Length: 102
Image (tube, rainbow, N blue to C red):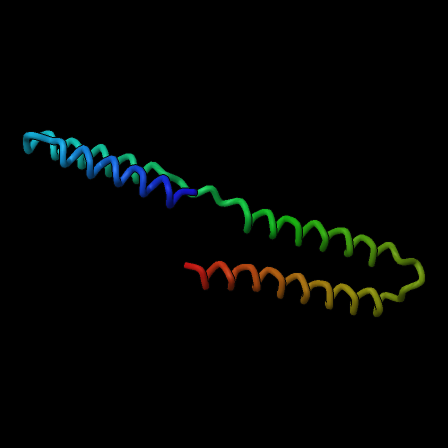
């Protein structure tokens, strides 16, 4: 997890600063620590995977609706509208949960 990596790099930077004997060494330790912390990237996979799964199910259901031979155009349109609303609600729920955790 990125947060653990940040904690490790921070501890390393603090240790290097405490070990420094000159102002130049302190500056160098600070710069290297800052660079190491800034280089850490979070591994974001859960939200994109959830959105991809929603889209996959949406596309499958949309194809199923369109392939229903006995449904009228009005029935298909009503089903597609409901499907679109459900998809949008699922996406908004994921985005809302993401915002609440920030």
